[in-house]
Amino acid sequence: MFRQQASLVAKKREQVRQRLEAVRRDKANVDAELASKAAEVSQLPDQPVLRGEEFRKYAAELRGKTAQYKRMKAELGGLRAEWGTLSRTVSLLAGQDSSVTSQLSAVEAKRGVAGFAQTEEQLRQAEQLKAEVDSAKGKTLEEISQVVEEINRQIKDNKTRLAPQIKSLRTLRAQHGEIEAEYLEKKGVYDNIKAGFDSELTKLQADLDSAEKEAQQEESSCHYYDTLSAMERVKLQRIADEKEGRALRRAMPDGAVVTTYRELYERRIKEQEAQQRELRERQKALKENHVPNKEQMQLFRDLNKLLRCKVDLQKAARAEAADMAAAEQQESNVLSLGND
Image (cartoon, rainbow, N blue to C red):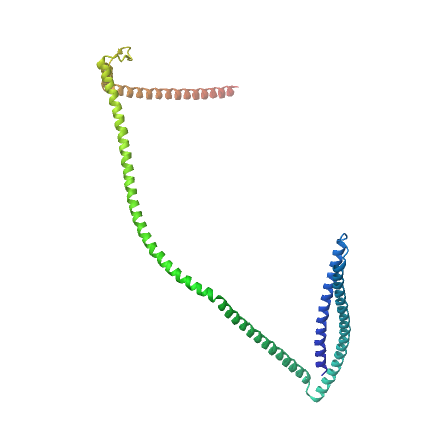
């Protein structure tokens, strides 16, 4: 019984504490607003004084806020008094609960049912917790049901609201299907025409490449024939010059002067023939003197070897003579020492 009273008092105390916190928050908001207004008033010293209707309106607002402040202050005082009373009641009930619990434990121990009250309290708390869970579950199910009903209602409203748009969308979808079919048909025609154009373009490109290549060949041939024509014109001009007796007058290396190309080429031919005869004679002389010259080279090599051998022998003889002279000098020195 005392525990139930204590539980009720604790719940009421928690409610009072929550109300006290709310009142404190309201008071803090009012104080902050009052400080803000005071700051605004202090920052605006040059503002004109309110008069007439504005002053009456401001005074009414101020009276309302003052009354609200006094009401909240009185309510805060009452809550504080109630908080003190409840705190004292809780402390008294806690002391009584401790005493009763001790007596009950002694009685249970005396009766042989120790822990019965504690078990009963645990069962009561479990039932209370189960009731709270069932209540929360019921509230949750009710909230879920309300949410489902709200969703269904919104779906129905959206269907009703979107019905014209859905109908228009179906019409547009049908039009889209028709346009898409027409597009695919025209796209097929376009692809066929494009393929034909591409094939013809490829053929024309090949013909163009062949024509450009042929034109390059013809241009090259044209340049070649132009060059030949220029050379022939030069030859014809030379022939015409010789026919008309115009002098060439070109000095040769031997000091002679030729007046025609015939003379020029004849002298060059004679020079080449003279060079050929001279080269043949030199070749013949080389062939005739090859064997004697070869033998003479071999004789020079043998003579060089003999001279080298002679030089080496002379060097060896000189070295041997020097050694013998040194030995005789040493013997004479030994003999002279013995006689002394």
